[in-house]
Length: 178
Image 1 (cartoon, rainbow, N blue to C red):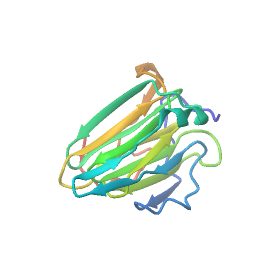
Image 2: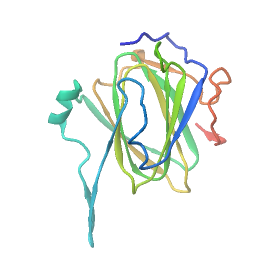
Image 3: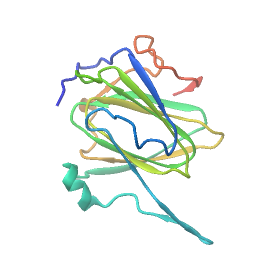
Image 4: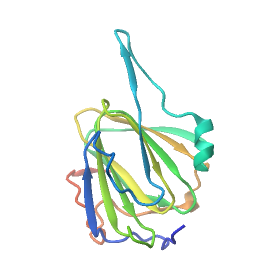
């Protein structure tokens, strides 16, 4: 695995916009993976399988904690990365711009990705250690995000930077960051 500089994030060198449902041909950084999910609808609503934990063992991912976060309209929660923890993100409600910024040394160091999604294009996103991440809630309703982690939360494993850090120069549009 690539090394990470403690408490530092790289300046954005390259940025890719990925629209909901158009992620098949994206060259993701090493360890990042996006798994489309399918909603089974009928007149009563829908059913969606999010993850089979047994299938994650093939990915060397053993779930240790599952959490949910609700964020208000226009809220930005970014940036942070983990030295050891991997995350699975699953947007459950609302429109999101999920962002990734590779903080690891290597070919994709400083590369950023904005993944736009809504409730009709669900997915599970694997974020490995060293890839900074966060999100912005885009529409007028709250966003609900499901997190599955391969380690229990440990503040000493987390490195943070402000969402609007000029040294990173990420192209956010919101003025409601928290």
